[in-house]
Amino acid sequence: MVFSRIVKILILLNRYIAKEVIKSSLIALIVLLTLVNFFTLTDELGDLGQGNYGLFEIFQYVALVSPRVGYDLMPAAALLGSVFSLGAMASNRELIAMRSAGVSLLQIILGVLRAGLVLLVITVTIGELLAPVSERYAQVLRATSQTEKVASFTQYGFWIRDGNKFINIRQFNKSDELGDINIFELDGEQHLLSAIHADRAIYDGREWSLESIDQTTFEDNKFVAKSVTQATWESMLDPGLLSIVVVKPENLSIVELNRYVQFLRANGQNPRVFEAAMWRRIFNPVAILVMMMVAVPFVMTGNRTVAVGQRIVIGVIVGLAFLLFDRIFGHMGIVYNLNPLFAAVFPVSLFLIVAIIGIQRVR
Picture (cartoon, one colour):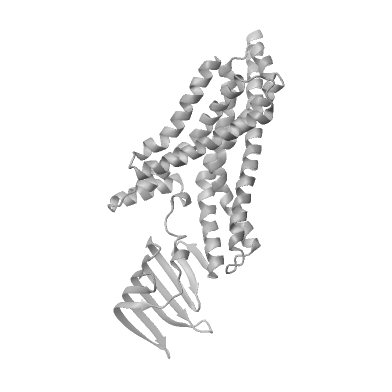
């Protein structure tokens, strides 16, 4: 009977710790996201008035990139939330009361990690389902508004309007090298004047050149077909606009990154950048649990009279240190040809070792 009551009390304390940590972490995420979005908004205001890029489009862009930014900030927010909530418990002597009642340090850590698992699920959901899609829409919105061109993605490729011409592109090697292009020209009454298909299009810095062209012209209820090996393509199509549809690591989920890595390998291309992004995407949610473990020794070894503000400053410094070190080491891995898995694991492992050493000292 007594044992069952003890178990119930431990479960209630575990839930209480987890609830407070989750609440504080989400508040920290909102604060960090607001700060980053403010700087993003300030930066985008520099392009205000370029084409159709107005205030409404800028706010849309900031909102669309928020899921990806929030995904990147979640480990730091988890650390900050853990430091804040556990620090508040320490200042209110709640942790001392728990330890005096027989609650072990391990049970407190488990309560924190329970909150971490909830945040991990939220992060993976955002990173896999929401962030890649919203990031692609954000880049399309920004580029099409600034260039005053209408563009869209469909299952049949990328579509863009250039005056009275509608262009369909189905293959992107680079922003200045395209494949499988269809160009449809209409008159003022929306009648089809010509249809052109080209196997390839190359931009030399000044103009586009089409290769392997099949052209059909419609005139007076008849059509004329001809083939041309190469021809200049007079188009205002901007390679900068096309860069939004060139594959980028931040626009892909883990599954899409893995598929693209396999595709690059099968075609004899270097997949290192995308492979590094894939492993970093895998270990970013794990970093949430590690950063929450880092928060425990900071709070448990500190004096209970330490102000919550000081604990928050410590959390911010450690969180930023992790983000910077993770990014810098990831880029170093690409530059110095390190193993992508090692480049992704090392920062998380280093902070995990720091957390374990800190917890052992507390014990």
